Length: 331
Image (cartoon, rainbow, N blue to C red; front, side):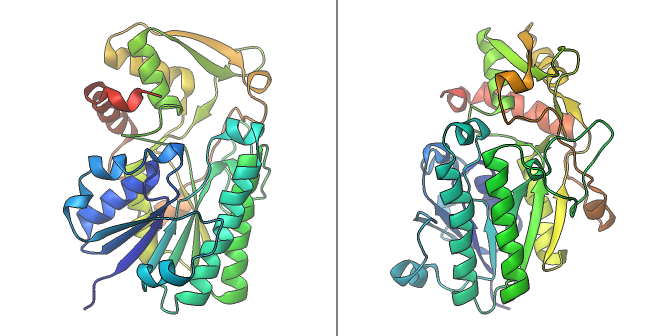
């Protein structure tokens, strides 16, 4: 039986490198990483850190997906069995300042990977489009959005992810590209960019800096998320590569909802340091930001997927890792 080949776009990024590590440790597949190497990629540092370059199963290419995959690059990539499309601009604040890079990366970049899949990959088994909970917009208390609920994008980042998602599903319907869409909630873990909330909290607690916690306008209800370690998200994607239905969507959700103040307090307690924080009105301090995101994860759960590691264990290990590897907290 021939060995599978998998192409991972955004393979040098935070979630991409965790997924590559998961594939590397749990399969004998050949892995191709494709990345533009923006500021969020840290070059090849993440892949070096997980030591995948010690094995000849992985190859890396730099490419801007806003341009087609053709010619020599297409030849070098060769035939692949699976594509997982992580590559994207993801920082909401940056999308508010300048949406153009998000359109180029998240919409045009998705178009180009779909065109590559349509024209060059005759035996492609699955293409996973990695989307976000933010396409549904703010979730009222008590609401958890299902996969096919209507979008309500509130910032340019989520709008471009929804645009890429619609393109992917259109290519599934029109051209038969074997697309699967995942909506994944806030991921965390080792080697995340320090601008993200959990590493920022760890850094602020360690250095005695004030952490701003987004809340409602009267500052009585902090924002909340269903946080999910990137390894658990990677495990879910591998599960869906085998069991997911073409043209369908799946929510990948953390095991419980956590508000951001409790999250900061947990981090501080784990470190044994009293935190400094203030609650701030989420929308006046960050237009386009949603106070609460929530997805219904029952569809994937009913298929038999269970997150390998629970939230508290994942978070504790992540905090300890950053303490032992402080360079990853540096901007």
